[in-house]
Image (tube, rainbow, N blue to C red; front, side, top):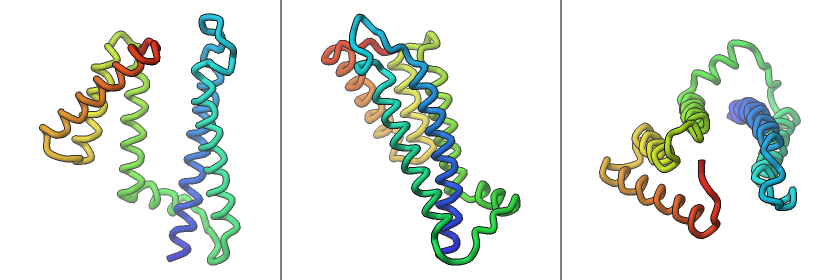
Length: 159
C-alpha cells in the first residue's frame, strides 16, 4: 500500500514540477510596466509566486517519495502507462486539458464572460457537479461576480 502512494507521489510531483515551470515561464513573459506602475505590481508577479510555490511543493513531493523507505520505486515504462491509465490520472488530465483550452481561448476575440461562463458550465457538467439548472445558476452568478469585481471595484479590464 505504501509502495502505491510512493509511486503516485513521485509521478504527481514530477507533473507538478513541469506544470509549475510552464507557469513561471509564462508569468515572466507578462508585461512588467503597465501605466507607470512599479514592476512588483505587474500581472505576472502573483502568477509567478504561485508557480514558484507549486514548484517547491512538487519538488518536495518528488524528493519525499524518492527518500521514503520501502520497496524500490522501480519506475518503468509499463508502470508509467499504468499510472496514466488510472481513473484519477485521467480525470486530472481532462481537467488540465479543459483549463489549457480555457486559457487559450481567453483574449481571442471571445468575450471574457462567455469564455469563463462556458468553461464553468462544461467543467461542472463533465464532473457532474449537480443538476443542470444549478450548474447554470452557479456558472452565471460566478461569472457576473468576477466580471463586476474586476471591472468595477478593481478597475482591471478583463481580456
